[in-house]
Length: 145
Image 1 (tube, one colour):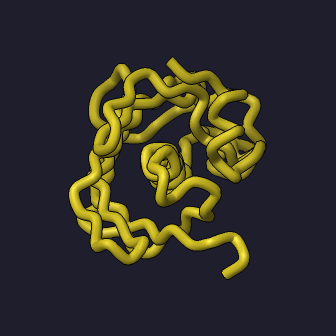
Image 2 (cartoon, helix red, strand yellow; image 1 turned 45 degrees about the vertical axis):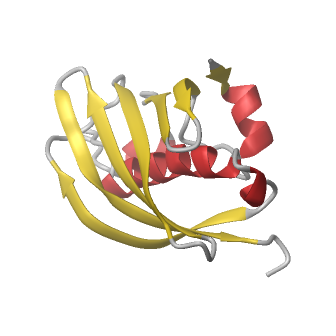
């Protein structure tokens, strides 16, 4: 549905911290599914952990947030804005994510406060099962702010 080059036109993130490879489903204005392939050669695995590499939880959260960012940035009122993490709540990690896995991501808009603040329920799964779930609050700011 949407590949990385199209995603780069929406998200301000770039490698090595662009953590969405493709959008697989989009139901505007409130739901999105995406994927990222966890590459074995990512530099982060040299330190986390060299003997048994595991994707850090913060990278899982960032990939879920970027998925939600895409959803929100596609709305007319948020085009061209900068998506910022504001709050993470009810985040729970279920199993590790290893190099070579495909991370299946989803975000559901659950609240629009009307002031540029949005709550999204987010999930991350691999073929091995659920990796993480939680709620992420994002703030959409004009790039000059």
